[in-house]
Image 1 (cartoon, helix red, strand yellow):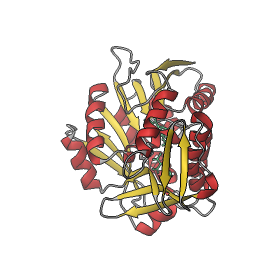
Image 2: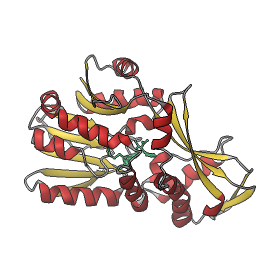
Image 3: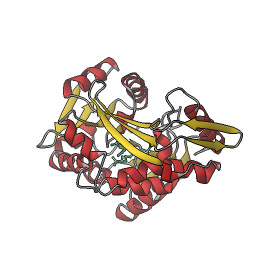
Length: 311
Ligand code: SAH
Ligand code: AVI
């Protein structure tokens, strides 16, 4: 059974347009990563998860599978499972099998991806109550929780890594007001060469994912980005502990969106995403500052990825 609730209006084109205009008008041009995920972007992300270089999904799946008993004891059985940025709900299946939650509440900005994922889940778990929420978790959300059943938040995939440390602190603090327990997937600091490869795959799927943002702005807002004149550029910024994704202009050019026009110099970039990487101690300290007194941590065998159980 799958029902849908909207946390707020899904993707208002006016809001999308305002964010694009503001982002392209800043000294370092930038676009919010939440706009990667239209139907095409969500499909490209699903392909990224299966790339040989993109170790994150495999590592988190392996550690979840290997430690599911302890994870289920931490999360508690029979309660309400709330997931932020649920996407394909891939790892969630393991949790649903182990926790047997009374309800699953997946929240995602990508309406198509969310619908497809919950239809699959409803077939696989016909007795599970699924309440999908199409919404933006970076803004206040109405999360439909039933009274009297404990809730646990699941935020896998290192999606928290898109927030800078101050935003991550605010997000963790907000989460505590939704549920007292939280499972968070965190990508760990490691050899920069491994990180670099994960965001610069040989098949060019990450490049297509990044460029789809410009294609989406053309499709939905009527801009005139010439995709042949942009290149995907991702680097590990060790000083800030984050992967940065950019789109680099291959030549001097102008772009128009309605009455707005921007000039781009050759080599100028639009910053499209940060993906922060943490050490276990740094993340534990961040969670503690956000009011979580206890942190359990499970990692994969190679120490690439961690799942934190915060309470
Ligand atoms: N949890 C999945 C998917 C991670 S990809 C996994 O671990 O593989 C990030 C997901 O978060 C995408 O499905 C995207 O649509 C969603 N997302 C990104 N920003 C969001 C936002 N601001 N509000 C809601 N969902 C968001
Ligand atoms: C969703 N998120 C955690 C991915 C990441 O690894 O930062 C998005 C992504 N961007 C490029 N590749 C994958």
